[in-house]
Image 1: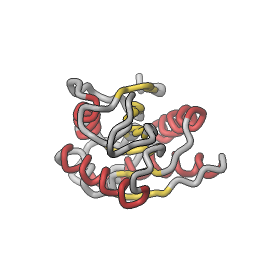
Image 2: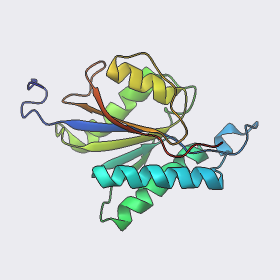
Image 3: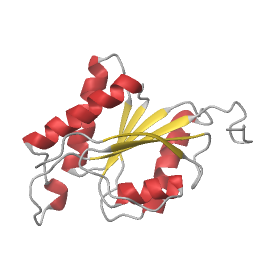
Image 4: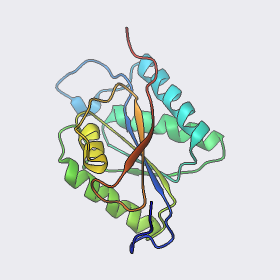
Length: 176
């Protein structure tokens, strides 16, 4: 990657998009659905994989219970490993939100906290279909479904649509 005017040092930002683990059955209170025991295990498996390979600076999560619980599992494990990422809840990354607005809000949060520092690793925990749509916009590939608790790592010198490259992904054990 070459340097850009917005990133003269050529530093790389890592954006780790994560879908929540398995949740309880669909119901009228979608926001209140919790992780199942299996979903908690999935979240821990994904967190373990991520923290073996990445030093987290920030976790941004949907306010819905299942995503927030997944993010809290990641945060707790990070803390036990001496990582202390900033934890932020963002209302605009729930299942049916606009992915363009979600990305804009994520970009604003990152800029507010880190300015032009691009060497940060940010985990974003949310839901289908918005997680796939945001990755599609950043990576400029068609949206593909995320499995439960799947994560995909994108790297980019600037936070801009179509300029990120997927460098890693991980899918934990799935329900039978």
